[in-house]
Image (cartoon, rainbow, N blue to C red; front, side):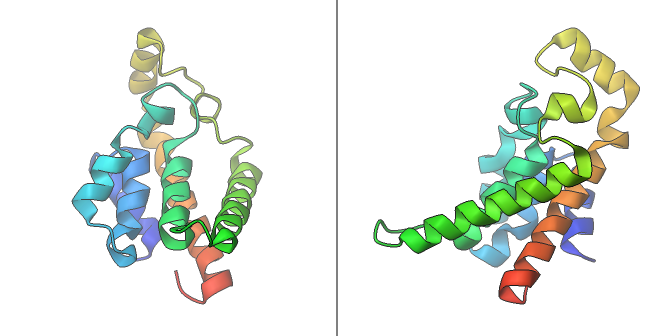
Length: 151
């Protein structure tokens, strides 16, 4: 099973978008899966159901940071590489979906309780969000293969 399929499966099991993406890569990158799920938990629904940046995107950004991020101040190259990879990821996600904003992607403002109810009734979380999670992980796989030769 590809990492994209694994991330989608995690989402379909009930984890929100950000934890589904981050936890798919976490153990391979040295972060315990349970801790990854906790760290990413608040990013679902566009950061705490505020409809801001899609959780699949924030989860992917965390994966990029976990793999390539700066750990000491003298390592400016890692910071720059991380920013470059994040930009590439975001550009590719926007090319697919036109936005990285949750409320634009799903068509509902999750910070509004009435719209959250409508979103649930419309089954947007079952019909649209799995694709966002899958494609976020697929884009990560492509980027990592391109630069490292391994996802």
